[in-house]
Length: 160
Image: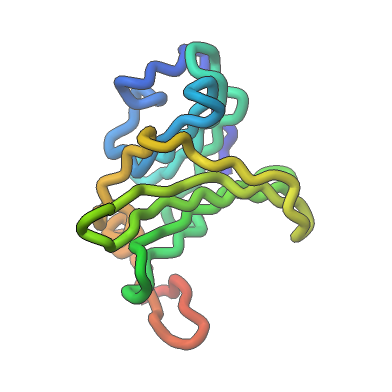
């Protein structure tokens, strides 16, 4: 994993990283004061979190083969996915999804921060701020890197 320093300020209308090829998701917290963005750029996936209008408080980048990505399992009343990043004993699990109710397909999302298996904080995305297109970009990137999703009892990414 590489920790990236971000010198530029967060610009919400554009990707946080200038090199962001494919945004996975982004949202704001605390009434728009802070933001998170997950981005696929080439063979890396990045996590950027911080106060809007300032340099990122935390920016992580990991090769797509190493990112902990849980695709939607295909069942349930909502469609959701998670991406988890690890740094110095902390994990940052980003959840994003939407309800499958056609009359109210509300998006939801947030970040759960843990250390040594203990939950330290949970942040919920501001209502209406979630930008997630639910596509196959991250799934396809892991497959292109030689990994296959095993839908079995212990679902996980495995070499093809």
